[in-house]
Length: 69
Image 1 (cartoon, rainbow, N blue to C red):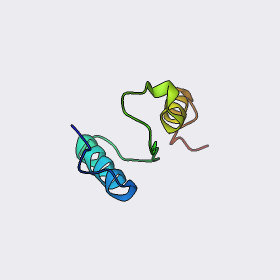
Image 2: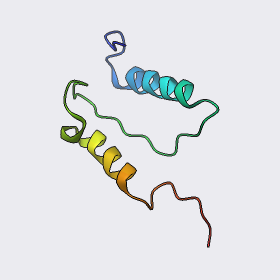
Image 3: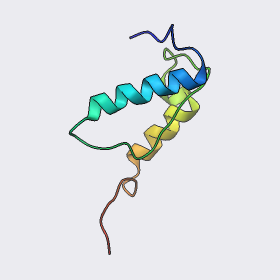
Image 4: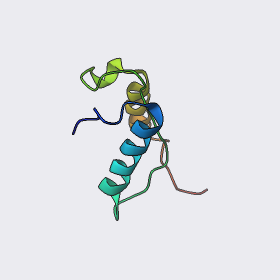
C-alpha cells in the first residue's frame, strides 16, 4: 500500500494508526507508537531509528507485561 497521498507527518501518522487499529481489531490494543519520519519503508527496520526501537521493545521480555505483583 503506497503512502503517496499521505506525505505530511499528520496524515501519514493517522493513516498508519488507522491501518494498525483495523489490523488488530479484536486481537489486542496499541500500547506504544513508533514513527520514522523521512525514512523510506525500503530501508531495513534495524536501520530506521524508530523501527529499531520497536524491534528492541519487542525483544524485551519486560515490555508489555501486564502481570501484577
